[in-house]
Structures are given as C-alpha cells and as structure tokens.
Amino acid sequence: MSHDVKQVSERCSIIVVPRDRFSTTASCIDHILQNTQGPYDLMVVLGGAPLHTQESLRARYGLRAEFIFVPQFLNPAQGRNIGLRAAKTRLAVLIDNDVHVRPGWFEPLLECRHETGATMVVPLMLELDNWIHTAGNDLYITYENNRAYAYKTLRHHHKKYCEGSNLKREPTDYGELHCQLVEVEPALRLAVYDEQIQEVGECDSGLIWKKAGLPMWFEPKSVVDYAQPTGITDSDDLRFFIWRWDMRLILKGYLHFQKKWNIDMTEYHTFQEWLLRWNRKLGFLPRVFPSKWALLVDLRIKKLFELIAKVIQLPQSLWNRLVAWRLGFYDWPQKN
Image (tube, rainbow, N blue to C red):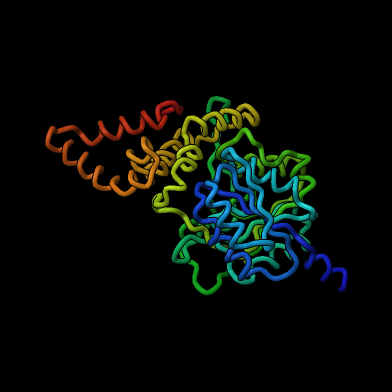
C-alpha cells in the first residue's frame, strides 16, 4: 500500500506553454496554484513575450514558478521540448496557457498512469458553460486510390457536462495537447513533439506513442476547462496569434506530417476551412498594423467596409475570397 501511495504522490513537473496568446498565462497559473495538491514543480515557457509581460509574471509569482523566456516565438512543440529538457522529474504535465484546471484535476492523472501503465494520460476537457471539448480521441482513417485520409475525432464533442457523468477511463488513439501527463524520458527520446509541426502535433505524437507500443489513456475523473478565445482583444497577443496561425506555415507542417506517415491529415481537404474561420478571430486592420489602436477601430472599419461593399455592390463572397487569398487559404489542397 505504501508503494502505491508513493507512486501516486510522485513529484511531477507542470509545464505551461502558450497556445496562441500571452495574456491568458496569469489566469492559467492562478488556477494551477489554487487547485493543485501534492508535490510539483511549476515551469512556464514563453517565446517572444513582451518584456513588460515577463516582468509582470516574475513580480507576481516570484519563486512559485520557474520562468524560461526566449526572444523568438515558439511553436507549441518547441516550448514543450524546452520545458521537458529542463524538468527534473520523471513525469510532467504539459498544459496550454488557456487551460484552467479544476479542483481535484491532478491526482486522477497520476492514479491513471500508475494503474494502467500509461505513458500519456489526458483529462476530460470542457469548454465554457460546461460543454465537452473532448473526452479522449479517435483517429479515423479512410482510403482512396491507395491514399490514406485521416480525421480527428473528439469524443462526445459539444455534449453537455453537468455534475459528473458516466464516462469511463479508456484508451485513446491520441491526446489533445491542451493538457497531457507524460513520461519525460520517452517523450524526449522518441521526439514525441516534432518541432517541424506547427499544428496537428496531437495526431503526430499519438502515432509516435503507438508505434513505440506505449499506452495512452483518457481519465474522466480529471477535469479541466479550455478557455477558447472568441476573438483577440489584447494587443500583446496580436503578432503571436498572426504567426501561430499562419496558414502557410501550418501547411509546411502538414506536408511534413504527410511525408512522415504517408497520411493526408487535411481531413479530406476541409481542415483549411476551419483554419480560415479561426483566423477570422482577428480582423484585417490589426493584421496590417498590429497595435492597440488598430484593435479599437477594427470593428468600425469592418462595418465601414461592409457599407462600402454594399454601396458599390461588391459581393461579400469576393471580399471573403480576397481575405482567404491573403491568409494563404488557396495554397492548401482544395476539394474537387
């Protein structure tokens, strides 16, 4: 029994990396400090964060967190690998900085790892108002003309979650990168987080774990919230968001993934449509002039453009196509 307790209470690193904004970092840290029991080392890896953001975080959290700041932007894999290499523990939780952990989230991940032998464990992830983001994942693959086309499946996506559920612990094909418990040594040795991939890293890492014969599990007793952005409202986030969701840069990673696994992960040429919608969280003007004033006037400018388009009878579809072209939408494979 004492052996079991020791394993479940094993010291763990918690490594926070940005997903697409810097401004959510403090809130993420606050939730970790408030809702995490047991021994852990808290590390925060930020690349390209404004100097005043770095100073504010150091002043606010002092020695309660170790900060690793680098001057250039980091994609999620780069940030995770920096944190894993700096970790002094056998286990690490990798968590995006727009995730808010709930009370009791931590111990079930460790229990699941100990009881199943999992190398990677993911929690139940919710969106705002208790809608399920995902409860584990499946990788669906279909074939056409000897070519594999894959789709990401988020189990129970957008089902309501109230006061608990009948969800069971079960294996998962891969894990969403919002929050994962992993073993540090094999994650680094197998290069589970491929730094050439800007997006779709969750599927790549799942395939790597699977190829190595290492188990991945979903644990419903651990619950976290993913604070999905409705728009970009902080000027400190502008340049990073633009870089992070650059469709041409993401395409390079997708082509790398395709060459690596011989699988087309564009979800039969539809994922770029999701990327286009995601990029619309930031308007035209702040992209051209990333600044606070551009954010303030962007909504009015958008309404002005809509009015001009109506007066000169410019079809909205033409404006949408121009925006899509500028963002790199048409560089991606298109549906037949």
